[in-house]
Image 1 (tube, rainbow over the protein chains, first blue to last red):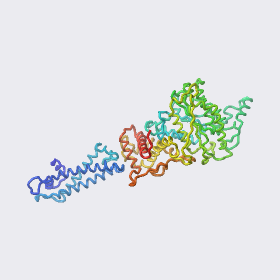
Image 2: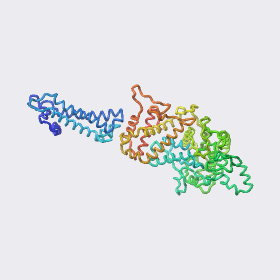
Image 3: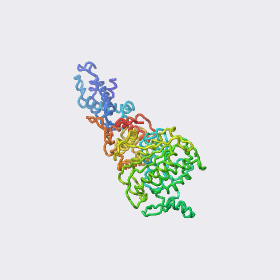
Image 4: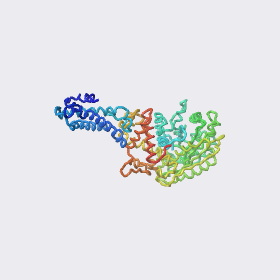
Length: 147
Length: 483
């Protein structure tokens, strides 16, 4: 699972040292026994997408029919993009890393961008099929391109 | 009366059993503005139901023309019975007075001895009366001319299509000329149909269930000594006609409805017909339309007729709860308050939404974009742009006139927001402002109900979905129960 996540994130071209850190290379530089940040970031990204889906399609939907246009979809999606970027950018810095691994802010930016991108894709997929969108009343036909 | 009935049928009011209504309007005054407006509303109604059918709540009773029943296509006109030989014809020429012998001339002079006033406000003999604006308060003239009904092609088509379970309802005013004369003549033609060899179903006609609505004076009219229409004559003519009906007419009817209003309101323009005769709609006409619905709801067992004589004749009147000159739903008695309150509120909500919020919601809300989608192309098509909006404008005009007349019937404040739309039932939001009825709530309800049903066309969706939605809204917000 981690390998798959790493593969799709590393397409964005950041240093492999950051990838090693995200895989859980521990502070003693001995083994992959640290936090599996790839999996954590990925699961958080999924949770954010689900959360935003519920917020827009189920919760706000109960109170108003106005938040159901493609503009509303993009606002929600951009909130997700910002959150996923922020989490991917900041989370790796909170975990102590092996001294031998070298990566900087530019790499974190690329990792953040990758997470934001996949978050967006996840949100698009989540809202592109009639289920679970059909659970919504007002936004049941709302996707990134309509109405 | 027919216009009010059309509006009520459009709003979803319907008899308990399914009926197809075939209005036949008999008026020699073909330039009458009220007649034109009524026919126009009927035409719009018919085009709407041709497109979406009658199973959608609004517009749920089929209205047909007599012409549409005529397989030979020999009838002209639409909903009107065209009186022959009345255009540009004086009464005396209608029955060839000049060719009569001296004795018959003397008899005609005796029977039609009165004086009247023509459209140029000149005093003339009754025999000189021009007939293309009606019989202006002279039922004795009308009864001669309207005798042509039983020999007309219209009556033949009507009779040939008349079935055992069909019913007849005759509407007339008692204080004028055309209606007062036409009602007994037409009733007699129907009951005596068995004596005519050239028509089918004469037995069905003779024993048919016939209801009638006779409208007693209900409006005031400007005093004009140069006009043949005189308010002071109304009561005398009514008394005379009532006595005639008591002796000669009532026993032939299964059900008779009397309607009138003694309230002296704002005077109508005294127009015998030469200016087109355009009068404001009046609440009595709404009550009259309810009488038609009431008659359709009566069980067959109460309308048995044998050998042209009803077993029972029932007479009905109509009352309001409060004698107020400004009526809203609260002033009506329970039955009509619920019927009119529910259906007119639904239809007015529909109208108000289309007028004020459709632009905002079209192609944005799920109810609009779901298949079959009601989009801007549909909005600009003939059904919506011409037929439905045309009808709704006529509905607006009808409500405006009812509200401006005296006594007025003004159940809605249509310029206000949705919370204050129904005058005697303003809605309350709670202290946090929650539960406020706004178009957002309306859209949510539309989206909710749209999700539960499939529709055959965008037009059908529009009518059916709005009926269901406004039905739920009137139930939840105003406590009206759907039938």
